[in-house]
Length: 118
Image 1 (cartoon, one colour):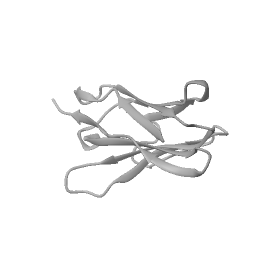
Image 2: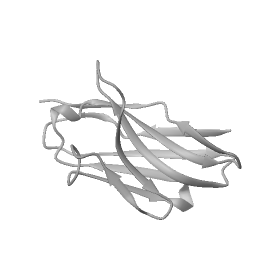
Image 3: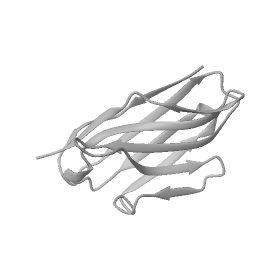
Image 4: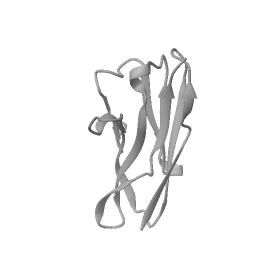
């Protein structure tokens, strides 16, 4: 079993910054893909950003040039640096990891609330 623990959410004013973290623990052979999703009230969960074990990244158009995803393989941890936050970024943010334990499976974090408001 693998557990994902998220941290770093909170309330921030428009234009501010937050840094989310997601740490994996348990029976981990390797982590192939790490991703951040978000779900706003009344909306479907959407992909925000992903990063492969190679370091290759992708971003939703709505967050390009504002958010930066990174990973520390030694710590099995992923980060999302969020700058120039907007009210429309308000959502619950979830991390997901595709982990070989040794079977390849997807695991989700519990979610962390990000609220952008003045």
